Amino acid sequence: MNFFSHFGAYVMMIRDMFHKPENPKLYWKEFMHQCVEIGIRSLGIVCIISVFMGAVSALQTAYQISSPLVSKYIIAQIIRDTVILEFSPTLICVVLAGVVGSKIASELGNMRVSEQIDALEIMGINTKTYLILPKVAAAVFTIPMLVVLSMVLGVLGGRMTVSLAGIISTDTYDKGLIELFKPYNVFFGLTKSYTFAFLISSIPAYFGYNVKGGSLEIGRNSTTSVVVSCVVVLLADYILAALLL
Image (tube, rainbow, N blue to C red):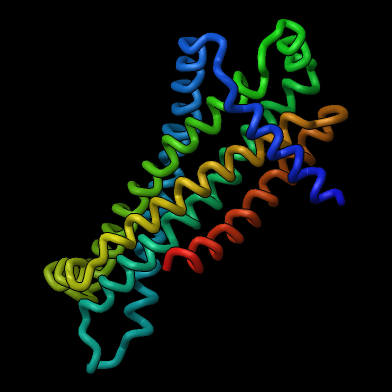
């Protein structure tokens, strides 16, 4: 029953979140601020993870494919497909669930505990639209861009590694990237990124918005929001793979 009550309250929050904004200019300013907070400030960790993700994938793939009967450019194909289909959309979003999700939950939790949300509601402001919608919209707008950047950096990280380690030449690697490339894989990766972006922003917003208690509860709800977001992302990953692949 606890699950259904939380799920129902979450759905009601999403419904109320999409009401018409009172002042579109104010919402646009908050949207741009959240784009900086969620997108630009996450750029560094995304770049570091993506490069090393591609590099490690290249080394492990080369280690597993040691047969002389297998063409070396297969390494590039495996790196390309694993990065585009799984590593960049799922791994990056799981990391951002911790970085972005905890920030959203703690920010809204602080506002709830300090009664700022209550003060806004007394003023007649729809707090769900004013506080949650810009965060969710900014996440859906910026996180897919970070995922695309992660795909590119992952492939380039693998290219740099195989070249420096002397596994295959860059020409052979580039040939493998082109061979049997399916544009649908990019569409699938972007579909996952949009879905995960919505989940890892709206779920922490729900937990932060509904904090009850003091500062200790803010930390607990932030941790819970990150755990729930990661589990839901992995579940959604399986469902999307079963439906679209």
